[in-house]
Image 1 (cartoon, rainbow, N blue to C red):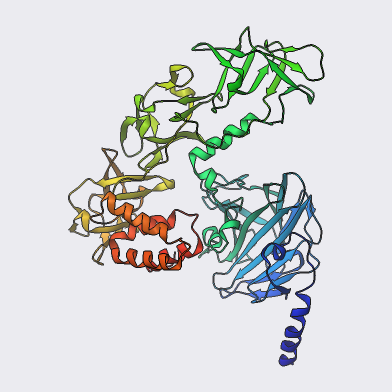
Image 2 (cartoon, one colour):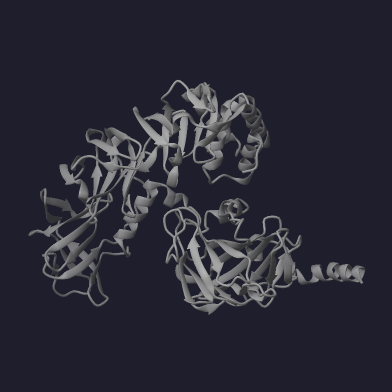
Length: 636
C-alpha cells in the first residue's frame, strides 16, 4: 500500500502543477513549482501538535486550548482558499486566495519548524488595482477556554498596541487543564505597521494591522507562534524568520524594521512629504465641505508674522499654505520648513480657473492652498546642516549647528558638546532620547533652558527647551571608539576603557586583553579574552566605567548587558580596510568574493568585532550574511 501511495503522488504532481493559479499568487510571482497540499495534524519535536486546515487556519487538537487560530480577514472579509498547495519538498504550505479581497490577491505561506516548535506565517498582498490601497488586516484566534491573561514580551498586561521594544505577546490559559502557553511574534523594531490587539470575548483574541500597498506592488506581513510549557517558554524569532526571505520581500515586510524608518534623516523627509498633503497636478484651493478649486496664485509673496518678526517668502518657495480662518496660518516650504504665525497683509491671492472673484489670503476664511507639480523632498537641500522641530509642528532649517552649545544628563553621567556632534535628539513616548554621531544612544535630559540656533530663513532664533521636540543632523552617525557598551532598553555607549585594570574573580585583567565582558547574573560576568581564555565570576566593585565623548560614564552591573571590544590594535585605516573587504563580499564576481573572504580570514580575531557589527547591521544579501557567519565561525 505504501508503494501505491508513492506512485500516485509522483504521477499526479506534474499534471496538477500546470493548473492555472489566480494571477498575483505567490507561485506566479516567483515561478515556483507547487503541488497539492497534504493537510492535517503534525507534531513537532518538542511534543506540540499542530492541525493545519483549509484557509491556513490552525484547528483544534484534542483538548488543546485553540479552536481556530490565525484566521485571516481583510476589511472583515474572510480569506478563503479552494486549492491549498505546498512546496515540492513539503517544507511550506501555500494558500493562494480564490478571489480578490478589496483589490488584493492574497497568498498565505505557512512553515512548521519541527525542531524549534514554531509555526511561521508569511502573508503576501499583491495590489492588482490601479491605485494605492490601505486596508485593515486582522488575525483572529478562537480558544476553547477562557484566556487567563495575556501580556507583551516586556510584561505589559493586556496591551492595546505594541509599542517601544515590544515584539509579541504571551497568552496564558485560565484553566489548569491546559499545560501550554501560546507565544506570538507579531512585529519587530521600528516598522511601518505595529499591531493593535483586542479580546472581544473571554475566548477570542484579535490582532489588527494597517497595510498600505502601492498600485501594482506587493507588501508582506510576517508573524507566527509557538506552544510552550509555562516553565520553559520558547520565543519565536522574527529575526531568524526574516533572514530566510529574499531581500526584495524582506524590505517590504510591513512589520519588520524599515530602512527608511530606522534612519532619522529618511524618517524626517518622509514626514515632510506627508505633511505637504495632497500634491495635485496644478495649483488647487481646498475649502471646507470637500470643495476644491483648481486655479493659479496671483502675487509674488506671502507674509507671516512670527515671534521673530515679520517674514516674507516668494511664492516659488512655498509648497502649501494652511489658514485656520482666524488669521493663524501654517506655511510649508520647499526646503522642508514649517512656519506658524499671523497671515500678514500683502500676501498672495488665488484666482480660480473657472473664473469669478479671486480669493484673498487674508486670514478671514478657512482654506488650504497646495502648489501643483511639486515632488516630495527626496534628499536634503544644499546647505542644510540639520532640522529642528517644535512641539507645535514648526520645523526650521539649521545652517550651522556647531555654534549651539548643548549639555545632557543621563543615568550614568553628563555630556557636553555642540549640536554638530548630535545625530538625533527626540522626545519619544515622554522620554528624551539622545543619539550622538559617535553611535552612543541613551535617555538623556538637556541641561539648558533654551537653545539659540542659526536658521537659514530667520537667522538666529532662541527656543525654550520645552518647545523643542526633535533635532536631526544632516550627516549620519559614524560609530567611534574601540568599546561598545550595550545597556538596558536598547541604550548604548561607544568609547574607550577608562581604567587600567578590571577585577574579575580576584584576577585583574588588562582591558586591552578583553574581547567581551557579558553580565551573567546579578553580580557576575563572563569575560572572553582575545587569546581564547575565559574568566567567570563577580565583578570587582560592581561598576564599569567608560570614556565616551571625552567624558566618563559609570554604570552598575544591573544596567549592563555586554561590552564588546572592536579589536586590539585596530586603527581607523584598519577598520576602513575591513569595511572595504566586507563590501566586496557582495561583488557580482565570485573570484572577488572569494578573495575578500580570504583577506578577512587573515585578520583573525582582530576583525571579529567589525564583522559582528557588519552582520548586525541588517539589509545584507543572503550570501554576504552566510560568508560573515562562516568567518565568525558561529550561527547567529
